[in-house]
Length: 97
Length: 142
Image 1: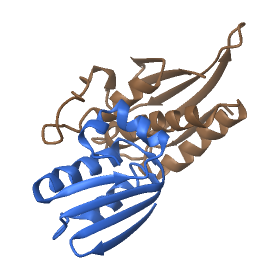
Image 2: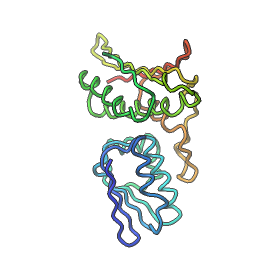
Image 3: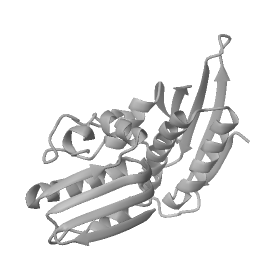
Image 4: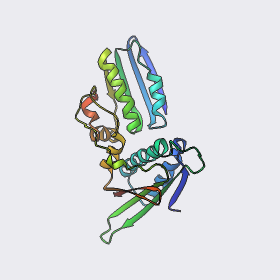
């Protein structure tokens, strides 16, 4: 999986490409860390083709952190991934543009 | 070849996925079904890789057997049956309570989400423990 990070002031955009699964989710968890100095986190899923529960776990962790220090938005979500968010109730806890 | 036997290690997830996907494509499964089955396969394979042989000292026999079979009814309804067999600690994932997916982010527990997704995406799922083996079977219509 490709992870591209772009920090502008206190806004961090993280673009994901490929599959966020049990083998790649730890990579994203490491890249995000505890999001020091981030007030706005944008996760761009335009090129993400797959997400499993391991990926959802990392998103939940980021959402919890950002609830304390700012806001998190997810954008460019494909219909396939939107379905997965709906099945798991993640559409209720994530802010999906 | 309807089955693949690999060591129960996460590094084998990609080969397991490729094996199952190639079978599904041979049988004309659409992209949506392929994606949903990939999720099911990942969750079930990761379960075995992460837990089944955890307390086993010898790593030689840490295998998982993935069997894929197709069926077609007289009316033309197609289904795929995927069976995971391992000889790890007896474990029935179906006994895990479903997570409460209406809770807020703060209250959310991530445990059990994987098997919950599996149950949502298959049409039938059953578990048996027999001859020292965990045998988990899922059926998906397409």
